[in-house]
Image (cartoon, rainbow over all chains, first blue to last red):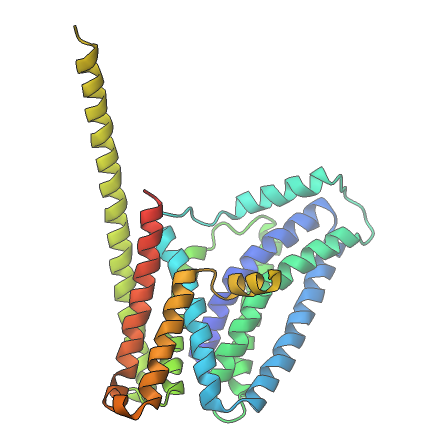
Length: 270
Length: 68
């Protein structure tokens, strides 16, 4: 079991499962739970097939160094995307992800279609649940395949298994919590999870991409925590800078509006 | 075209990140293949870290500028 890989897959999956669960919940409440769970189950099976076939096939066919380079680049791209969103949200430039808004929006969409609660399977409900779980899960599948297969020795199965275990535990926890609460999981610190995953993906991506070029890091694998610390410090600095920038702009806007009002009053005076 | 756009959105969804990482890769590939640039090979790791930080800063700077 590779704990770093399992943890990264767990965190990434938790974020995506929370998003997917919101739609599954809406379908369950507004149409019926049979259709909703069937769609979610079918999507989970599809994702498992993708991971099992594509993951193992990629590891078997591509030489490990080339594979690490490709995977490193993909992880850097994914990591930067997640990190950017999380930093923007922390600094207040982007709204925090609101599961309740998605819940209400999808609910309104289903009501507008005139769907009502029926006991039998509803194709629309199954399709909506399937689509949402598959789309959110695809990113997780990608992370599990790339992350798992890179962190491996010769076969690649160990890393993928660790990542798949992390993702499965996240899925069980999110669905379990959702079934108990029966409401959108708004209490899950989605942005913090996204930030941590962004840091981990970027750090591992940097490490593997450089290794793919034949570069040997000082301290070998022990350099990964150093990369994590570097990216954490940089992210902290960027959040601070963006917050300061936002406050500075607000102050400038206030000053200019006050001076405009003063000028207008001067002009009005006889 | 729709497929390419979907893959782009799925993978990265940000042109600065994509272009920045591609340029970094090209430079690193040059350093690691051209023998005249061999002395720079020891800096591959630090170069990649610097580029990643620069790309992140650039894309965030664009977002902050866009908010004005």
